[in-house]
Each structure stands twice: as C-alpha cells, then as structure tokens.
Image 1 (tube, rainbow, N blue to C red):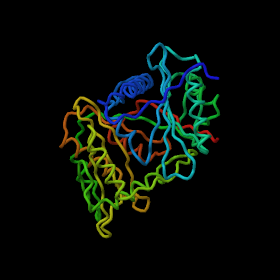
Image 2: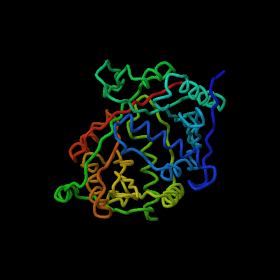
Image 3: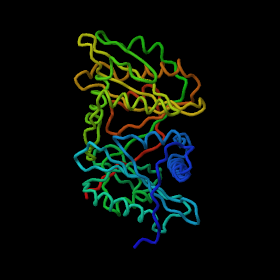
Length: 350
C-alpha cells in the first residue's frame, strides 16, 4: 500500500474556474522541473497555454499529484490517442527536488501503470530531460546520443523496467537572424512557398492533414515505435479553433509542388503573446518523395523570416530533434541553432 494519497487533478474549463488551483500548481511543478533540467526558464509555459493541450478530445490527458503539508510536490500525467489501437500511453512527471527519495515518484508511477494495465494498454512511452554530467554514459541503441547513467531520472526509469530507445536534442536559435539573402537562393524550380498565421486556409486543409499524418510515421522514432496519428481536415479545423482560443499563435510555412498543386512540406512556429519570451518550433516535415531539393532548409528560413516580419522582438526559437535525424540537425545548425540540453525517449512493454 502506498504511503501517499494520490490526487487526480481536475482539468478545469478555464484558468479562472473555481477548481483551477490544483491544475495551476501542477503546471508550476512542470516548469520547475524543466528549469532544473535545462538550466533555463525559457521552456516554461503559462497555465493558460498548457490548458488547451489538455482539452484536446483526440488526445486527452489525465493529471495526478501528491501533496505534502497541503502543497502539491509532485505531478504525473497520462495521455492516450483515442484512435490508437496499439495500446500506447504517453506519460511523464516528476518530484520537486526537496521531496525526492521518499517513494513519491514510485507511488505515482505505480498508480499510472496500474491504470494503463486496467485499461488494457500495452506500452508506456516517456520523454524526460537528463541534465549533463561527466559520469558514465548510457548510449541510445540508434547509435546517436547518450544520457548520464547515474542521473536519478535514468536510474528511476531503468529500475522500473524502461529501456532507452532514443535521445532528443533541444536547440536554441538566438533572434533576430539575417536570412533574406539565403531565401532567394533556396527556392528550387517547380516549388512555391505559402505562409499564414492562425487558422489554416480552407484550400490547404486536406493537404495539411496528410502532412500531419505523415509526420507521425515519417519522423524518426527509433524503438519507440510511435503509432500512426491520423489527421483529417475536420481535425485541423478543430485544432485551429482550439489554438485560436488560447494565448499563443501558430505561424505556418508550406511548400507546394507546382505541377501537382499539392503541399509536400510544412513547418510551424508557436509564438507566445509576450514578446520577451522565446518561440517554440513545432513540426517540420518534407515528404520523402520530395526530399533532395533543400526544401527543409527553405521552409525553416522562410518561416523564421515570416515570424520576424509579423512578430519582431522575440529573443529566440527552441526546437527538439532526434539525434539520429542528422539531416534536420544539419539544417538547424546551418541556420544557427545550438544545443541547450538532451532528453531520453524511454519505453516499457506491459
């Protein structure tokens, strides 16, 4: 029997709702853990920015926490895709530094694992930051990247039956960047760039849905074997509406194959309302059948210029890439991104 009472955190209708307090506390723990892991608060999100992601009907989240003396000191989340038939659960969480080594993390993990088993799930996936140190390394089976084996989160995951499958690099680009001259030389014959902020134009909904679906299967996932995530035009519309109700704005650049009239690549930047905060790089993909034309570089450069025109003043852009995704890392490095930290991608079969 656990020594701790585990509290399920209600997902409020809004941050101003009477029951939003525990959710706000949980968001604060998330930000504290990421600041500890990366040595920076630039990956912090406001509760009103996090809440819309927890209210997606296709990928619902459940949150859990433990209190000590009335204060929330640990959090965990449990997320599934309602259309996924592979039994995959995404989870994560952590314990505030002053409350570790008391069994709180173990209690939360066992609680989530028991829910997954009761619901017939078969696989747990988690991404967690691993702060650098000079000790022995645990290497990714992809042959790219490693994490410090003595780190507490690494030992915790190994001790609970997880295997390291992938290492992701977090990188930062300082803004502004001067890329105008580079853009002129990048666009190949037969392709055309389109851009927008906010909602997706109706004419591109089906093509963007196809690209988002391919993002779930074409991006490197190593032994994590993440399931296909099917998007439709209606799902794009609904997601656009969800984002429009929140405080952040998406800036999108796409590339059209002129002969076919179809979109073959896209990239998205996610900007907070506050100019002093950094931008998040969301998905970037070029369909495999159109690679070899530097379209990835074209999209990155075009979208960076797009957001600098529309929203000048943000201090930087933060992005995540699998260490084995050398092509995209080469693109990012050529633009000016530098590493700021690493996350392990871990898997447990139930």
